[in-house]
Image (tube, rainbow, N blue to C red; front, side):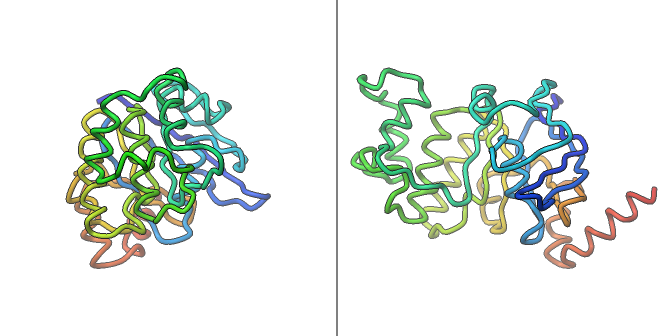
Length: 245
């Protein structure tokens, strides 16, 4: 199976505070779930892979074998990486319609393609949603749906999803889950989640557990049940035994 992402000895700092240190792991094609205790650095890891400017990095990040460590977020987006934020930022003065045209790389004066209106319908969004300023005054569910809409159009090689199921009601979760199922047919996914209900819609090929910003444990779906029964200290013991060997 093709390797899509490799992280080697990754260290990430924010304002001189070390959040991640010495991380090493790789991902193959497919759907992957990233778990870990609160505050362990999961969102930071996604942001580092995307190359967000607030992070100071050392180590290496490879995407389909290419070193992207020094590329800007825009350059990484053009390579096929898309980040859906846990708390998508608001942007005053920029309509959702404008962002979608930029993603599709079409003339701002031209009309949006028909597929966008089909996606709006599938997410239970009115066409007037396109005229609203990016995430300004959006509910939690609307913010998530806006990001999923952009993701559907971007069709990236790798989608980084930071808790796509947080702050949404049951009906919205169902719509988002069904959209992710569709996206997973065309894109590789790395999903951070605490609500494992999202796994009813997308079955992961592997589960990655991030511990204390330093250790990564990778396994199959069965590790989720072990975590639910025994907690993350169980995984810490596995990592300790793995390091000893």
